[in-house]
Amino acid sequence: MKARTLLLFILYVVIVICLTPVLIVFMILKIREPLLAIAKGVMRLSGKILGLRLDVSGREQVDRTKAYIFMPNHLSFIDGPLLFMLIPHPVRVILKKEIFRIPVVGTGMRHIEFVPVDRKGIKGGKASIERAARLMRDKGYSFLVFPEGTRSLDGNLQKFKRGGFFLALESGAPIVPVAIQGTFEIMPKKSFFVRKGRIRVVFRPPIPVQGYDQDHLAGLMDKVRTSIQDAGQKEES
Image 1 (tube, rainbow, N blue to C red):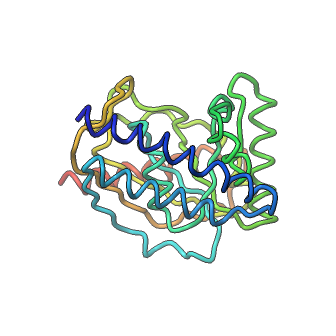
Image 2: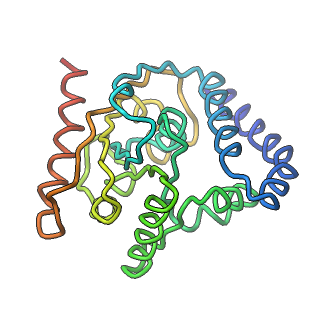
């Protein structure tokens, strides 16, 4: 367990060093999509090194030509990289601004137009949502948003935050609920090492946002929450 995690950490350091010149060239030439493809490849290699076994279903319901907001439950640190790899789109992510301070990695994230958010202020969150919505409308990007905002401490689905739903209303993009099982056991919050194990990921049918507004946001949030919960219950039965 520890050996695999340490091996992966060393691999990441080597990859970052090797990709730094590539990133510089991509930034000069304003090339973004190949960098996303490289990142997805690194995530696939990471899963093999860690010995993760994946059961994935429902991706056939996602139209690869359309922009979506993917909303999964959040059980572990590995959920983000896992979904980034599995989503059949060159997806962007809204991340807390502190992550963008990581040398090289943060620069790469900014270049491929991941969106930083300041969680301490309402204005910062609103500005991030507006920027993400603009990218979705102008460039057709899809976004990955964790509606719980942070990882679960006990494996249960937490209360949803409204930011991702404001993005859905402003962009007009459908929401794809995603149910994740198994990552809490593999790498719970406050744990650094990853255990071997099986992960189940279920992509649920897209939920259109037309007909909803800010006054009826609770109904949309409940619909997404129920979709995630139903997928988890079906997997357990």
